[in-house]
Image (tube, rainbow, N blue to C red; front, side, top):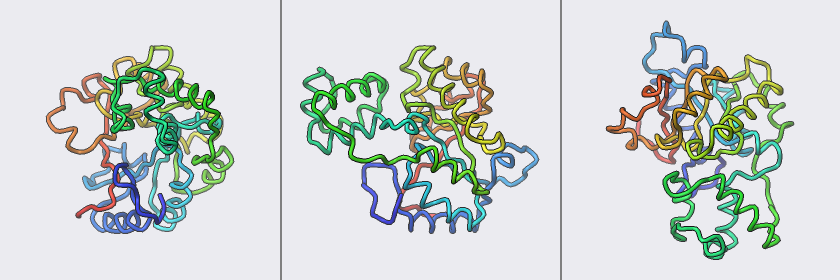
Length: 274
C-alpha cells in the first residue's frame, strides 16, 4: 500500500484512497478493538474490526502512523515464513511472470494451468496445490540461477518496533500461506502451530489476536481438519476474505457448518461508494 495507483488485477488500494475511506466510514461506523468485537454487550451494530494480511512492509509502515493518529484499532496478520526470509508462493509467481518465464515453468513441470491466467488459477485448490507449486518454483529458480532481488515483508525487528504502537494486534495467517484444505493433517498442524508459537514467543499475550485469518479465505480453502486444529490452539473464529458476491447463496458451506465462528471480510478496492 502506497500512493501509487494499484494494479487493477489485485486487491489493493492506494494510501490516499485508504485514508479517505477510513474517514468516511468513521462518520457512520464504529471501529472497535478485538475485545469489543467479541463483546455481545457491545450494542453497536455498525462496528468494524480492521484487519490486514500477509506481513507486507509497505502496508504496515504506511497505515500504522495514520491509524494511531485516528485512534483506530487493527489486527495485522502475518505469515511467519516471511520472517525467515522466504517469499510467499504468490510473490514467487509474480517474479516468474516478471521474468517472462511462465511458459517455461509450465512446460518443465507439466502443469495443467493456463499461462494467461496462471496467477489466478494457482489460487484455485481444485486445480493446484500451492505447497507443490511453491516447491516447484523454488526448484526452478535454483536451476535458472534466479535470485530474489527484493524482500517486501516486515522483519522481526520491524514487527517488534510496531508492537509498541497502541492500536495494533498481531494475528496468525499460517506459516506459508498455503491452501490448508490441500494439505495433510500434519501439514495443517505445522502451518498453524508454527505461526502460533512465533507470535507467543515475540509478543505479549494482549497483543495477539484470538482470530485466525484463513489463507485464500474461500469456502474451498479449509476443511474439518483445519477447524479441529484451530480449536486445538484455542482460536475463537476465522476470517474469510472472498469477494462479497462469493458468499451469496453459500451459507451451507459456512464455517458454522463445522461448529466454528466465521467472519466475512470486505476486500480492499480503490473505489467504494458509501
